[in-house]
Each structure stands twice: as structure tokens, then as C-alpha cells.
Length: 340
Image (tube, rainbow, N blue to C red; front, side):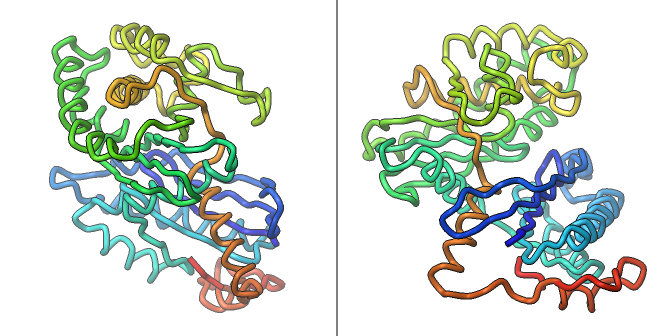
């Protein structure tokens, strides 16, 4: 089946189309995304502005049309911390449902951590033993650990790279005082959460998921994305600490020239590095492995498992949404149902 996954993140809004079958590895068919940083469309109260809402709704309509055009049979649409933590988040979800054919599923932070862990377990397998998974997003930082497919403990804290850059590193390049203050804030926020993992013992494998960890590993010398997903990529704490120190003296224009750093993430990669370094120190981790799968893949795999267990076929997503779609977006031959 062709499955669409619509991810409303803090930095980008991303539609991923995959060909997925029970028991098989999901294979990417097409990708459609826009660098819409919702964290930059917040007012002083943290509400998503009307302009941000208009851009979001426009992309969701566009993504829905792309999914229809490419024969998607099912659609999973979800929103993470950017909408979850906005005071008007529910209003935004209601507006999306009213003005598009898509219902966004709001993922709580702990569930986001659990589903990402699930993807990591599927990637590394049972032979990996006890896994500690770390994931840095734009608005939040997730930690999860356990021996099974779902973690024994999974938590989310407001330490996303975009959020921290906006709130703590307003200058470019940042001042030494602001970097020092941010380090203290990250350490204080992580301390009680990391302590809650103590009774789980030492992990056999520590993994890092998300674009931020992939970028940090690339900066530190890991293979480029063009080498494929099966090349082992690691991130050493010693190397990370060196690069965090170097990047603290760089402007965004300098950082964008580093390998693996896009213009979109050049400003926030320093905050991501500080979170990663602090987490590795707090968990006493010298090295972690980069996992190419994360939240999107976890949702896809959970959906496939659900179909296998229930014996259900994909619902008539395309038919139902064709009827609900605004007239100007309808395709005469398209058929599809929102199962988000």
C-alpha cells in the first residue's frame, strides 16, 4: 500500500509517501516539504500567529493534493510540540480540520518519545539489548529507554533546538554569557529527568535520532547522507564537545558551511549540540549511534502492525476526502479517507 505521513514539526512541514507492506521495510516513494518554522510564528504569548496558521493550512492542502495525485491509500497526519504547546493549539487543529480534508493527530511528548523508540528498536533489532534513545526536535527533546519494542520509560522536555535558540541565543553569533546561561538551563532541566532513568541500569546501545543528531555526527566526521542509510554513523562526546565550543564562536553564516548543516538549521545547530552534549554527560555516554529511522517511521510501522493484527484493509481514505476536498483541489479520478 502507498501510505502518506504528514509531519507538522517545529522546523518543517513534511509529507513523506512510502510504499509499505506488512513484514517489509517501508520504501520511500516521494517527499514533499516546506521549511515552515512554526516556532518563528509565535506571538509574545506563544500563540501561533494568523500568518503562521495561513501558511500551515496552505501547505496541508497542498500536501493532501500531492498525496491524492500519487495514489496514497492511507494518510497519517500528526503534529508535535509546535502545536502541542501553543496556547491556541486546539484552535489551530480545529481550523485545519475545518478548512482542509485532514485531521491532525496531536502527539503528546511522551508518546512521541515512545513511538520514536519503537522505530529505533525495529532498526537495530532485539540483538541491540537495552536501548537508550535520544531525539532532539525543534521544540522538545525526547528520551526513552527499555528492553522491549516499547520503552520502560519515555519522557519529553522543552529543550528543542529551535525553542532554545529563540529564547536563549538571540544574538548571532551568541555572546559567551548567553551560551553559559543556556548550558546551565539545559543541565538543570535534564537533571531530574535523567535521574528517573537510574533504576533501568546501563543501556547496551545509545542511539540518536532526528536531523539534529545526524547533522552533528556529520560535522564530527560521519559519512554523508549520500553514502546510504546502512553505513554506521557514530557521534563521540569528545568530538561533540569540541565542535560545540567552536560553533559557539561562529555566526550562522559560518555554520552553514559546515558539512551536514542547512541554512534552515544553521542558527539552531549550536543549541542542539549543547543539548546533545549535556545529555551524553548526564547519562555518562561516550559514544552514540545514529539511527536513520525516527518518529515518522515509527508511526508507519505501528500502522502496518495494526493492519496485520486486525486484518483490516486501508479505509477508503481517497474516496471520502475527495468528497470533503474544496472544489478547486478535487481531481476527477482520485479516490481517498482521513485516518489520521
